[in-house]
Image (cartoon, rainbow, N blue to C red):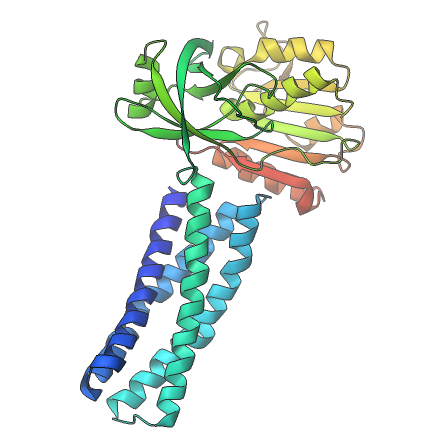
Length: 377
């Protein structure tokens, strides 16, 4: 929802400024002084649309970009303050000044100087906002080319969760933690799904909670051998390059998918990186890939699995592991120095924001906290 609001508000800002800019040029070239005055009055009134829309874009963009290291996200975040300052410090004052002078019939040298400043500032914002819109489309995976793949199989990996296997396109190479956008052939619906499989595997695997959405129903009903489209790989939710430093994964539910790709890859490459996974679920039946993770932890001395169940009481006969939410006390029981690792967190929005606040409150530096929020699943 937040992503959609950000996109709609951004498009509204771009169209509003484009309308201001083109109407100014047209009125100056072809219109009378009366037409110019009318346009200036319309632009001033349009500020009551532009200013709230810019505020929404800035607030939603800052929220969506928190904790993300994507190059495209970083570029968008750097442009946003320039767009805001340009709008508030130049475009808004120019709108008031030009309207006042135009309504008084003062079309002198100062008017056209101010007019020139407004046009240049508008052109700058149009360019920066256009770049942000382009990068937003790239981040969604909608702006990349698609490959045809075939569904090779499906399996239930937990209560209400299924994994789907598809052929790997020729030349497809992904980093553990990246995602693809999958598009169905029947209704054209598409979703972003993290890649579960490691780069060395012969096929691609994704997994998802089977909620009652048109996309999920369509995916579940596809026969084996059916052709569908994928775009990607995309995303920069990948491990930092310092292989000597420890990492901590905190996953909630289906948020395990990008981490499983990383852990499988570490096992395949005999990585010496120290990894600890805190994996939170309601109960064992809802924990996707739990048995595989337990096997990987037993075989890899550098990988520690801490599975916790939030829907069980401590001491339940069906579960002998941790219970309750992942908190600082739980981290301290398993981490020699909780401030040493880089933390990666994926899961529902509430879980991710709560984890970020918890880690920040414990003195973990912001650049050592990397998050990805799963919404709509």
